[in-house]
Amino acid sequence: MKLIVGLGNPGKQYHKTRHNIGFILLDYFALKHDISIDQEKFNGLYGEYLYNGEKIILLKPQKYMNLSGEVVKRYIDYFKIKIEDILIVSDDLDMDFGRYRLRLMGSSGGHNGLKNIEQNIGTNHYKRLKIGISNNKDIDTKDYVLGKFSQTEQKILNDKLEILNNILEDYLVLSFENLMNKYNKNI
Image (tube, rainbow, N blue to C red):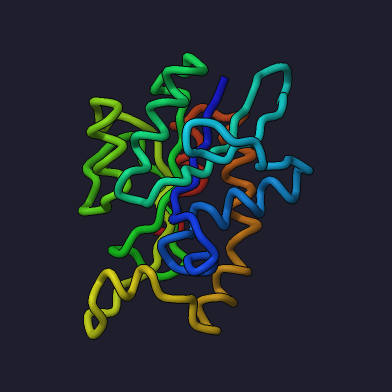
């Protein structure tokens, strides 16, 4: 069983914000594969499907970003998912907009959602797909990450969604080392 978590904030006011790029990718993946992310459990919206006989759960925590680890932990415990079978999709301020990087482990890099996940699962040894949203030092970080995409950013994101979708598809069939070798060349 695998758990793919897209990080974001619940609520319509956050729908197309930089911080919600994890939700955006999960919604895109779900649409392409005809998966409904509409079941509710433990403050999370999730959908599940079988891929080559293995259950795959797509999760969008419905607590705010800085509490998303509480939701992830409940799913891990309830579904008895191993930490090595989790992939977290999040935004990253330190990468140019539209860049992406797969990581096997590492620090939260100041990302409150990742910090909370690490606190709740007790380790920073979990797989992640980080998607660059850049950083505008002229705008307060909170206002920037909760801000809507510019037209240029939206075009870049639209152009990247298919590649990001392919990463999620390949995550289901490739070893994580091979996945990183295949996709981390865009850095």
